[in-house]
Amino acid sequence: MILTDAQILEHIRLGDIKVEPFRRECLGTNSYDVHLGKTLAVYKDSVLDAKKHNAIETFEIPDEGYVLTPDNFYLGVTFEYTETLKHVPFLEGKSSVGRLGIDIHATAGKGDVGFCNYWTLEISVKKPVRVYHGMPIGQLIYFHTQGDVINPYNSKASAKYNEVKAIPVESMMWKNSF
Image (cartoon, rainbow, N blue to C red; front, side, top):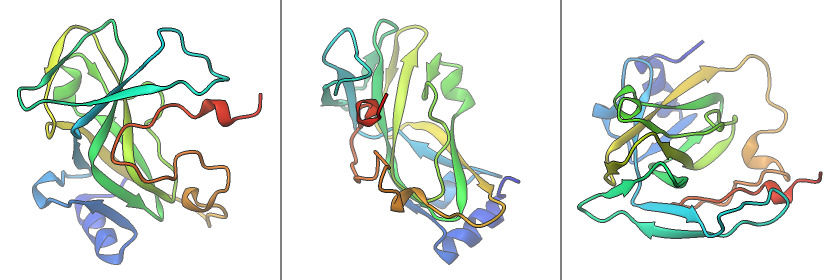
């Protein structure tokens, strides 16, 4: 079951959901709008290796915006810091963003109960498009869970993305054993 606006507000009041900064006008009927942070990143190497730590270069989006191109893959970050302690958060692109040909995640749209961080965005575009820091980029949808959570994400020893960073974070696949 997806939380409604009234339920999202109630869980924020209870401390189960946190969005910083919280702006009431960003609350939709059953979602919360998040915005593109100031920092983007690209991988330094043209060929990535799943078993190696692939380095990224970060840069800030200038006030006049930055043109994303289809021949590159970008990591972005949400402006908002979030905590979700009892629900499963899903990050989906806004339809207006999709209609510009922007995908904000390749595969990682679902968070875990206990996710407490900024969201790294996996951005690709269909054609060149200028983006701006602070523009609406996605929406968080919260799902009820059923049953107790034994190992929330923020307590897992194996969690690779617990370090709080307001910048895009590169893949940590290399930390897996395979």
